[in-house]
Length: 125
Figure (spheres, rainbow, N blue to C red):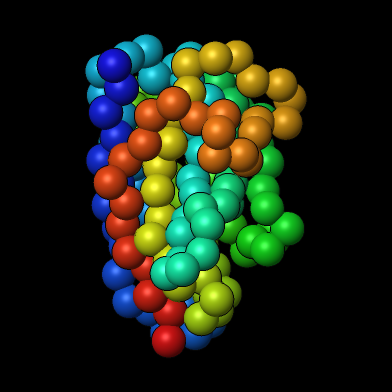
């Protein structure tokens, strides 16, 4: 069983930057496919970025060029660095993990991930 705990959310001005962290415990972190998702009020949860066990990454078009996902396998931690934030980036951000092997393009679909954190709020104004 995998447990995920996000941190780093908060309020930031338009154009600002914010970094999120996700601490992972309970399973072999190195083998997990990891992702960041977000959900705005009244909207469905959507993929933001994902990283496979071999370090391959994928990004949604809405954040490409502004966001970097990375993982620290030594410390079982996933990161999301966000720059040039807009009000439309305001959402609850969730960390997710899945033990199944992923392709060279790690998935951004909600259905593909088995484990989820509780989320951390990001507000851009």
